[in-house]
Image 1 (cartoon, rainbow, N blue to C red):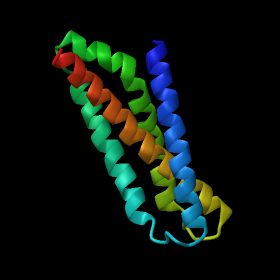
Image 2 (cartoon, one colour):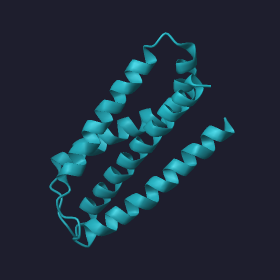
Image 3 (tube, rainbow, N blue to C red):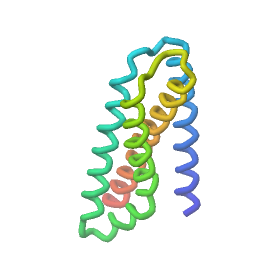
Image 4 (tube, helix red, strand yellow):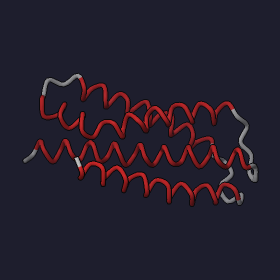
Length: 131
């Protein structure tokens, strides 16, 4: 349990640091077309939810155990990605706007959290499958 907590904190820290970098790039106008990243976050969340559904429906007890231990981070990132992506799609995002910058930062946080937590889940499944 302690190892999973350290992994979650590491993933969250990496996601925060990298999303702050992208947020600053957006705020300063270096990244202006952000809509493809928002759509990518939404599609990635749907694909991650599909992966969670498929893994949850498996008859393998080991896969379900790993899913129970590591799936909460993926589920959290899926819910956050869907919600914040829909908000970002509905709101007009502009450079040098504080509200837009915060929304973009949260979108990037959930993109990175989703990618890293899904990767951690799949690595855990592969590690226990081939051991």
